[in-house]
Image 1: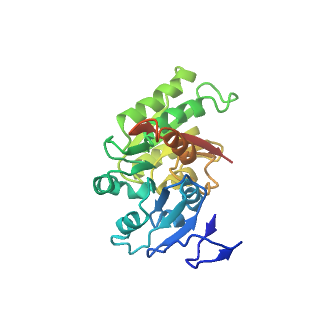
Image 2 (image 1 turned 180 degrees about the vertical axis):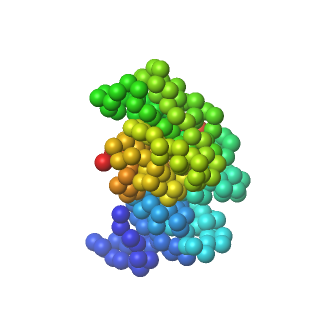
Image 3 (image 1 turned 60 degrees about the vertical axis):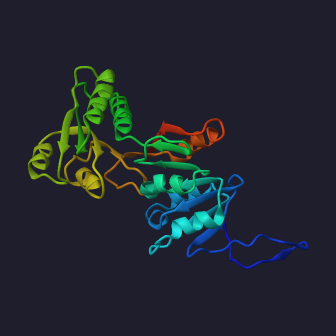
Length: 277
């Protein structure tokens, strides 16, 4: 990825295109003609690899400043993209962008999205999908474990669908060995912590947001347990965690790009991928 400086240069007698900084950082990429990526200011700091992945889909990329009041819409008005790729954290702006710029094809992959509508190409990552994958992965992970080895899934405000899909997929491979399900409503409930500490848990799935997820692995689960964790952006794996299920933004965006001119809108399930040590 090359940064543009905003200064015009002459090369082989021809003038290069000058890109204007709209209170933001703009970079040249190799995306399709007429495409633009707009990133929120947090993502490049929180998950730089994820930001870089999304950035590759645009002909240019704008990272909004932290004090970006109206900069998003100024950028869209100035760049006039035919295709706009939007950062996951900018989901609340989807409808307003399409209302104000109905000719845009808006591509978005993230945890939430607007209702399907013309011009919107969205991939939404479902925790229930991740839970279903997790049950299958854990059930087939270590054939040397005894048939009755304890497996726990720790959800925080987990949906009935996510819990059921984890249970069903685990039991499909290990019938009769029903996993322990803990659906907590606070990050660190003492009674649940103490109860799990007393058990010889050999496999665990953790679907708890934020830093508390790794804390469960470090302070509650025994060192010989295999720990799989749901994590949207991935990043560094905590030493107590063996693997993570993360958003596969690249594969999901590729699917959406393939549908850009085949239909006037698209809504798909985001793809999860397994990261192991």
